[in-house]
Image 1 (cartoon, rainbow, N blue to C red):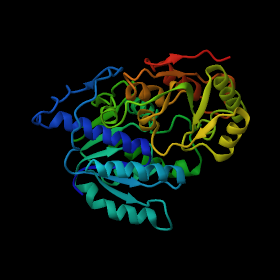
Image 2: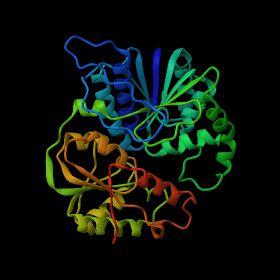
Image 3: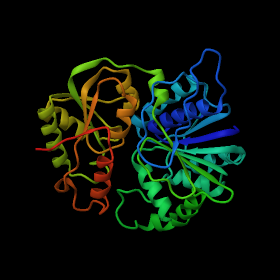
Length: 375
């Protein structure tokens, strides 16, 4: 494994690696006979990507290998298996690494990846907050780094990198316990390895509105690969709701969340609820019984599910990455995306002090969505 080496731990990360590969191929490859000319370089220094028409399918850059640092939960593993097959269909080499299975898995993974990581000309990271990725980068710092979207965490990563802060997920409260103190040196070293410098270039490939940290390059992800491969979708007459894992991460009270889902479903005539892969079975059962919504467990990231269809003419979501990504993936289809902000009274008492402001920022910067008044 040489050339470009990507580390992913979720289906969305792998999707965005494929989007990066598609965009890089359009930038780097000469036009082929009869092909649509490559799109202009979509690098930017200000927020607000503009949608572009579907581009001519292009192969992934030569030498791209994706290492799946497999999570343990079954839903994520299932979606990753499906995404891995899509990547292989694109000519990408995929290595499945059971990095969390059994005693000694961490040491075994580090041994197996040490050589390829040293040899890689570029390392693509799906989750800069991952302790696994931080450990790998701390041991073997690459000279060229690309960070692709892993949900709204990209916004926090860019902000923390610009401020020189240690990398901490936005929904975590305080400085953490003993485990966080033990891992603090790893986090600090990883932040340095993810920062641009005299011998390191850093690119952020994102569909989110981020302010480029000094010295970094921000490249717009406009979901050209997704639009070139899937759809346009057939539209249903009703609306669809998109679920969130804010209850599972300890941010939102479960009873308040259920009440909000009930009101939104009734107000907007929704018939289906697309579950987040981290939502608990008990919560989803309660939603199905108490609201009458059909709960759908997608087998691929929602951007691909929506693009394949069928999908509602209106998609209603709480603040999450999809309020930024779905308008790009569904541009020109007539689908409207609406966002319902999280009310302060929905938050749990022990939620992170940053939670309300961060979620409001996610919703407020979604310029291609409709804002909903909850009531």
